Image (tube, rainbow, N blue to C red):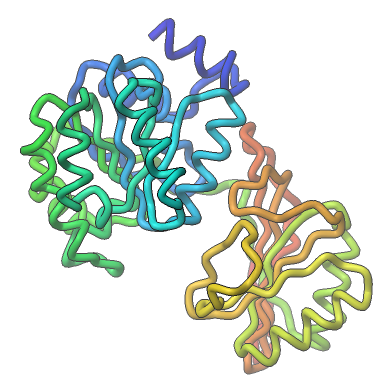
Length: 337
């Protein structure tokens, strides 16, 4: 573990591991399978990234979204970690260049979607290489009992037969006991190789308060924390567009995101907004990204009824608590914290 500790400090800039990280990394370095259930922001990525930098062979990372692949690879490259992805955004020249790097053993971590990994030409390419680890992010997509089941994820069990010497680590922040059992059975992971972290978030505050004027309340919140980024969720696209226009006129750097963004839209770092439209604000003009380092994040929901929700949490690695500024306004006006 000395090398893992050195990478943590010298590459990623952290002094100590978070809970379970050290045990999981040591476990994977012994080439043992694992199921990891940890909250978002709990440090799951380092659990396979650090072993991926230590293994002699390749670590394959299965990710469901192209935007997440790009964010992860961009961040790793900033740290000097040889990593790349293969997906439909690459032109033929870029694809061939990445394939060349893989064949020359110049890559530690390769990010793929399940569809790309299952493609015959991809499996043929990877069968020429030494694969030491297969990391499956958002592993709840494997389970038919999960809320986000994807058939292609279920087929990933077949990949294990192609790389019998590689350890397999499945990671998720969303898995009931039934879903966890389904993941383990599908990927042939033994029950004793399961790591479940605490989901207690002491730095997350929630408060309920009466809604008076949603716009004024949102502006008041933004003005209290002028240097921070955040998300404003709205019930309708029209409401999102109107609010975005107002905030832009007031000097905020705001980007509107929708679930059906056109391909012709400008390529910026994207953030999933599910089925709800969202406006992203930032006082400074720097680009807001899904992996953009922030001291905290504020989120406001403007609902159709008389309610407003604001959530704030700290993303600081030391877990510094944030002031309880979360507002969730009820119709009755009853305040809850």
